[in-house]
Image 1 (cartoon, helix red, strand yellow):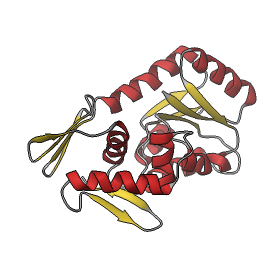
Image 2 (cartoon, rainbow, N blue to C red):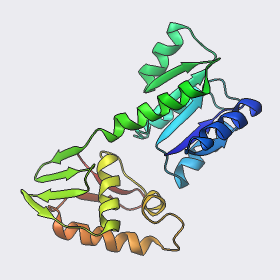
Image 3 (cartoon, rainbow, N blue to C red):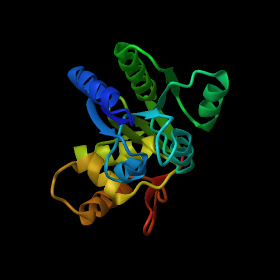
Image 4 (cartoon, rainbow, N blue to C red):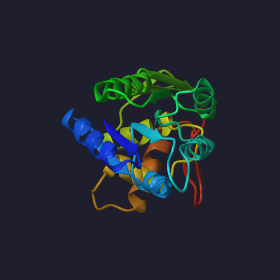
Length: 215
């Protein structure tokens, strides 16, 4: 599981990164909220842990903009603010969980894992004639099972999980190929292969925006 930790307190951020890493999580930690969206352009995260009281750009502003962009990454608010009004505001902006300071690191870990499980539970998605089993990596088109290569499957899975928003080519490269030295043409070739087996118009594209599945 890969987690983005947004926390300006150096001592707390360092200790949380060490603890979560010791529990098997991959943690990227930033102290400057202005780096938030730049990092999301190049990295894919399973859960975001966000402090509200950040310099430059507040946590609430980051959360509002994140959801406005259509990003559905599970997000846990981590803050010293414990008032009901603060919680209500964050949940209305699209937060998935809320943990007040001080807290036990183990509780944060349990909540992160719970958020991740909640997303993974979405096992089957049906969109028109297409049915995707996200848990078991299977695809049916018009009730006939279709076999895909691993790269094709990862592309389709990411598009379906992020449906209703355009996913950039760079996002797909990061998710499917990671550090492999490949370019945009590889993504286009795999999208072309997917379109051969999927209904016409299932994968939409927009120059400069990327690709989208509507569901």
